[in-house]
Length: 594
Image (tube, rainbow, N blue to C red; front, side):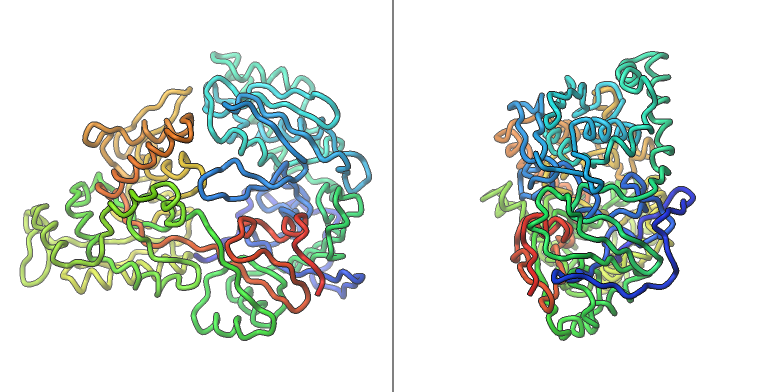
C-alpha cells in the first residue's frame, strides 16, 4: 500500500534541536553515516522529542527504545529479542512477569537506566490507554500491579482476566527516563491509578484523572534527547534528522555507524528517487510501479530482502446489505476472482496470492492448520460454480447481465482509500474481472484512510478492502473478522454482540453459525492453552472458509530494500528480524562497515 505519514493530532511544538530549513554537510568517523527513512512517519522538525507523540522527533530502534523487540514468529507472539530488558521470566499463565534490565544500560547523559524509569514509563503508558495498561475494569490482559524488586528488576502482575499476550504487551513498553518525564505524573498518581481500577463514581473520577493526562504527555517537549538507545538525536530539520552514536549505550561496541541520517519524504516518488540514486542504506518497502522497480534494482548495491509479514488483504462484505447477506453470493464472487492476476497487478513485489480464505496469512496457515489446509475450498476461478452459486441465491441473469432476485439491477461497488495505491489497483482488477462475467462492478475511492474507516464504521459501504490476519497472536488474527467490526466487544470482561449498524458493527455477520459463535471462540483464544488454541484456530479457519465474511486476496510479503555499497551483514531472507528497524539490526550486531 502507499506509505502513509502519521498525522499529528495536536499543534506542533518547536524544540531546541530544530535548525535551519536546509541540510548541512555532515562528517563522521570510520563507521560512516548510515542513511535511511522512517517508514512510519514523515519528519516534522517542530515536533517534540517525545516517543509518545505520534509525530515525535524520535526514531524507533535508534534513540527510542522498548523493553524488548518482537521476533514476529509465525505462531508464538511472545518471542522477543532483548532490548532494555536483558531477560524476563513469567509464570505459566503469565500471571506475573519479572523483567531484568540490562546491567550496563545508561541514558545518553550517563545516568543509569533503573526500574524507576520502567515504572514511570508504565505510568505514562496508562495515560494513553490500551494494551496491558488500561484503567478499564476487568479488561483482559490488564496489569494489576507494578512492583520494583531492585534497581534492575521489576515485576508486573496481570489482573484476574488473563490474556495470552500479556507478556508481549509488557515487553513492548516504550522506555523513557524518569528524571526527564517523571514530573508529568502528579503526586498521588499510583493511588489514583489503584482507585481507577474499581467501579462506581469514585473510580470514574480516577479514570478521568488518568486519561486526562494524555494530552500533557503527548505534547511534552524535552529540551534535548535523552536516549538509552544506540543513538541520540543531534539535530533535525525539515529535510532530515541526524543522530549520533550514544557512547553510553549498553552494547556500544556492536554499533558500527558513527551517525544515522533519517531522510524526510513527501511521498512515494521521493523515496523511489532516493533508492534509484543509491542514497539509502536500507528502507522498508514502498509500493512502486514495475518500471521504477527495475531502475531501483539496477542501482549499484541495491538488493531486496524478503520475509514474513503477518498481514493480508481481503475484500470484506457488509452482510447487513443485500445480496451480501447470502453466502452463495459471497462464494460466487470468490469463484470469479483470479487472485494471481490481482496480485500480479497490485502488489507483485510485496504480495503473494492467497491460497484460499482462512483468515490467516498463508505462511502462518501452514503452521496452524497443517494437513487441514488442504481440506479447505481453494476457490479457484470457476465461472460454472459461480453461476451455480448465484442461481442458488436466487439471482437472475438477463441478456448476459446478473440482477437481483426481484430483477432490479445488481451494482457491485468496491470501496478503497485513494491513497492506498495497491488496493486501488487490486479493486480495479477485480471489477474488471466481474464485469467480464456479467456483473456490473466499479470502484469507489475515499479521499483518505481516516475517512474510509469512518465510512466503513457507519455502514455506508457494501464491499471494502480490509487488512486482516494480523499475527502472530491467534486472538489478534481473528479479532479482525470476529471482533468489534463484526459486532463482538468486551465490556468489563464480558463479551457482548451488537446488532449490525451499532457500536461499529459494519460487517453485519450473524452472531451464531451452525451452533458456533465465532466471537466467543475468538475470545477464548486469549486464554486457551497452545493445544486448545490450535483446535479453535482450525474451527475458525473452516468456518471462515465456508462462510466467507471476506475473500482473502493476497498475503503481504515483508520486502525490504538494502544497499551493500557501504555496509553489509544484513538479515538474511526470511529472518524474523526483518520487520524491525535497522537500528535493532545494529543492536543485534548485524550491520558491518564494508
